Each structure stands twice: as structure tokens, then as C-alpha cells.
Length: 549
Image 1 (spheres, rainbow, N blue to C red):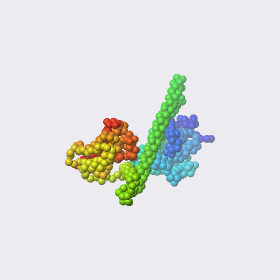
Image 2 (spheres, one colour; image 1 turned 60 degrees about the horizontal axis):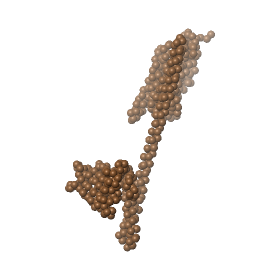
Image 3 (cartoon, rainbow, N blue to C red; image 1 turned 90 degrees about the horizontal axis):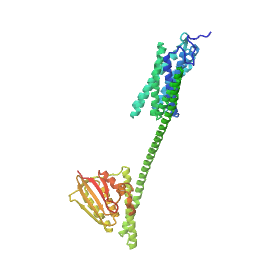
Image 4 (cartoon, rainbow, N blue to C red; image 1 turned 90 degrees about the vertical axis):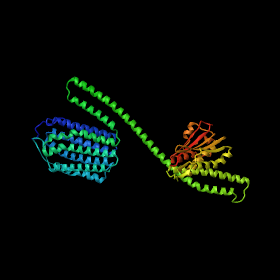
């Protein structure tokens, strides 16, 4: 004769009079939320190890909860004994899997094979002793309560304590090693969430194993939905999964299940009709909501991909720009030596160092000399640009008279102006000195560029160079009656290789002179700008620098 515990056999596996009503809420809600969160996290990132581990954790946890509920409902001692022995195995499995999850999630990479072997070797004693008295000694028929052996009553809890200590210590170590505030918060919340998840999970079993109060085993399960939700949130938030879509899907599915479950309890026709309408409405509206959220998430993902592509393209452009600058610097250095030799020998030929030449020969050599001078200036400009862009421009600053330097430059360039039948004059406001603190040679290049430009782009008329004081600053200006410029040209004139309409008149320029003038002036805490009434109405270039203190 078969012996059974003193209550009826369960219906639908989990329903019997021996199961406290509260268990259906604690166990049912825990399983529902665990599976919903786990499934949607896994669905959103199937290839992500953290998502897989969390999904496996929720599956194992759900199996454990259903086994626990089944044991309460079952009145066949052999069934209770068999499934009770499995519960201990699943408990250890949940803890080991939690250790693996934390190690991967906070360590940001998979653990080594040896660590995996170490983690999961904790399952071996439970597996080996499953059918022995070391696991379960026997069962009390009157209440279908198993008598636990050493493995179930002590070993499993020792493993659980070791796993908890490992998780806490690993979390503390990662928290201390992190510098970024966001990463610290991730470590803190993950460690706290997993720790409380495991404590809540084990609380009922500890009370039951050591005090025999198994009816309290549902207490910890009430906290499980919140803790599983927290873990799902952490995985999605810090791994950039679709948390908004997951939350929406979870909410809709949860509402569908809750409303559908009402059909098991309601009996009157009106309630069935109303519940059916509510169920159909939730299914229809919920699906529309999910589609809307999915579309929004997809659009954001596309924008993020586009943003990443732009960032990558910008990085590549910066790299190319750096390579271009380095190439210009190298090429310019390589050109200087032969240009210096050509310039030197051309000068010696013109001076008669190698004997007399015919007039035609002199003109040819003079053209070579002038071309080399121009090319040397272009090479020097390229070198200076590369130095500025690489942060290698060196300024030898000292106090000197800016007005005297400006006057000397004007006199040196007067012959160029005379050759074009232009009047070049120098004026100042009569101040005794215009001392500034700067690199005289570099600023001299600025003045030469501005005056030489006016000479080049003024077909006829005059050029006036002025120096004056304006408060604690010195103001240098070059006013010409040349071609002038539009407002659009004026806005771009000081950029690299920008030449405006002037390129049509003088094709030999490099388009770097004004850019260098601006950079050098700004390196001296000054500024350069241009004003013009319009095309064919002349221009005035200004340089403003601080007076020496």
C-alpha cells in the first residue's frame, strides 16, 4: 500500500490545500518578473555575455521557485524526496552563476577557464551526493517534510557564504580601483543588488532548515521582482541595451498576464465580457505602444551610429591633417638646402664672381634669383605654418621700438612700390617711442607681409603706413587705394590658403602670409584685421599689440 501525505494530490502540479495562499503571490510574481526581465534583456542583446548570464540566472531561479511550489503542493513522498534533493543543487547553482555574472559584468570581460572550473567545481559535491543520505536522510510522511543531510543543511550554506564574501570583496576592490564616478556607481549598485538578491533568496531556506519554519520561506521572494528588475536595469543601462523598450515590453506583457489570470477567478457573464474587452484593449494598445517605442529606439540608434561615424571621420581627418602638416614640414626642410645653394650661386653670378656675363645672361640669372627668392618665402611660410600647427613655433621676445622697426620695413619696401609707380609713405603720431615686448623678427615678417600685399594688389595710387598709440596699445595700419574687397572675402581672408579676389591679379602668392600674420599677432596677445569700403575702394590692414609695461 502506497503512503501519501494527509492532503489531496495536486491539481495542475501546483494547486493543493497544503499550499498557503500567500505562496501563489510570492512565488508567482517572482517567477513572472524574473522570466519577463530575463527574456527581454536576452532578446535585446543575444550576443552579450552579461545578458546571457542574467537570462540563465533568471531561468535557474524560476525553476527553483516552481520546484519549491511543487514540493509544497505534492503529497507523494517519493516525489517530494526527489525534487527536494534537486533544490539544493539549484541553490548552489544560483550562487555560483551570480559570482560568474558579477565577475564578468564588473570585470568587463570573460573570466579565465581556470576560474570557471573553480567556480563550478562547487557543484560537484552536491551532484555526487544527490541520491545519498549525505543529501537527504529521509522524509516525515505526516507532513512531507524531508530530513536534510550534511550537504543540504551545511555544505550548500557554506558555499553560499563563500560566494557572498567573494562578491562583496570583488565589488569593494573594483570600486576602489575605478576613477570614473559613473563606473563607481555601477560597481556599487551591482554589488549591492546581487548581494541583497542572494540574501533575500536564501532567507526563507535558512529559516526553514534551521528552525523548521518553512511557511516563512516566501518572505524573501517578495523582494525578488525588485532585485531582478534592478539587475536587469544595471545590465541594460551600463551595456547600452534598449532599457526603454525592455521596460515597455515588460509592462505590457505583465498587464496581459495579470488581466488574463482573472479569467480563472471570475464567473458571472458580465465580468467575463468586461475582462475580455479589457484584455483585448491592452493587447491592441500595448502592441501599438511597443511598436512606437521600438521605432523611437531605432531612430536613436541610427542617430548614435551616425554620431559615431562622424566622430570616427573627424578623428581620421585630424590624423590626415597631422600627416599633412608633418609632410609639409619634411618637404619644406628638404627644399631649403637646394634653394639656399641656388640663391647663393645666382647672387654670385650677378655680382661677377665667376666672370662677366652678357646682358641677356644677366637677365636670365636675375629671373632665376627672383624666382628663388619667392620660392624661399613660400617654403619659409610652409615651415612656419607646420611649426604653429605642431606647437613648435619658438618666439624670442624682448623689448624693442616697434615704430622704428615699422619705419625701417617701409623704407626697405619703398623700391618695390617705386617700381610700380606707387607712393609709399610712413607716418606716426609723434610719440617718442613705441616699445613693445615681442619677437622683433617674427613681427617684422607680419609688417612685411601686410605692406608687400598692399603693393602687390594696388595697381595705382598710394599706400600709407601709420603707427600710433591707442591707450596701452600700439596700432599699426597699412592703407592703400587698391582693389578692396567684399564683406564675404574679408571674413575668410586670414584663413590658410585664402586669397580672395587677389589671386586673379597675383598668382604667385601662397595664401599663407595673412594666416601667419594673424597667428603671430595672437601669440603676442594682439590681433590683426582688415577694413574695406568695398571692391575697387581700397583696404586698410591693422595690427594691434600691447605696449611694454
